[in-house]
Image (tube, rainbow, N blue to C red; front, top):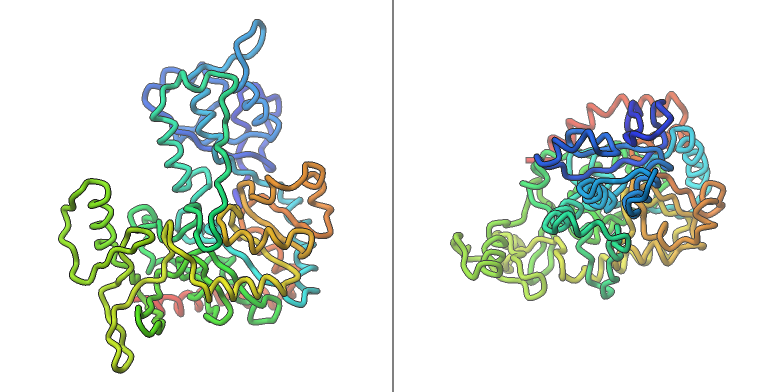
Length: 438
């Protein structure tokens, strides 16, 4: 959770107090904007970020859409472009008091549940140093920003211009959308090698809840291996989009969990360059094989160690256009079917078919949803229910960071002394995690 020491960046805001409940956005400032900043209606930070009261952000969006009239605020066309970029991925943060209230409700559900499961996305790993996808600084957000910048600023001045892109189309049952596909991440974008990533508070809390019987299963869309590193056993998790530390035999399907990143990015880059440029500056590895679905390489270069096999091993990551593993998806579907509480943490619920596991449980299970961006459920939920979410007996909706919510939930499940003992043991757990990596 942010420390809250921020004020509203809308220059016409009358409230000079510190923000708690707020909207945070990020745009792309260029050199040409430096001379215009004093004329802008928003006090953009140097990195392009800005924070607002919810009502002030709504006023900004209204000004973005409005045309110049007498005696009214007018937004410069260059600032309209900045707002358009920022509006693609706004992040919302509830007040601390609101989150504390929702955490109490969520904790009571967890303690009373018979089969509570977790459904996790990229948002639970941002605190570990890995980037997300649709946040204000996410990978797909930055791609969308570059797309907008490729157009002229005059394109955004029409009142009919839409701020938001159309929602992604649902894919076939076994084909994931690009949004949170872990196979799309590489070390250059993450900036932290996968071997150096360590479980966040949320990862550890979910593992403890599982050990103590409060949580039965985890369905994850992440490929970073942090759930497994925290101690969650393979039989208690379905990693829908694979795991960068796991490889499997092409022939006998024996699985190997490694302490190092198993993917051969060079071989995949070779095929990418052939596809994009018609040639590659790289020499094709002898073991490389182009996947007919994603067009990349899944072979890791190692061979199966089972007696008499010696077939090539392949990574388990699901790239764009790849099919999900039938057995992994089937296990997830079975667990979702018998669940009565689902903790949806750090996910936009826009990646199908994974999101179907949650969306099909609306009005059936109790749903705890924590994400800084709007989710598919928020979009589809009737407006009347959205305003009553905090009092709903089926929905606990929190806008904010997963670690903050989980800390509050844990305080409502465990005794203070017991929780402190567990918290104090984190340094020892870190040593265990270090020993499990290269």
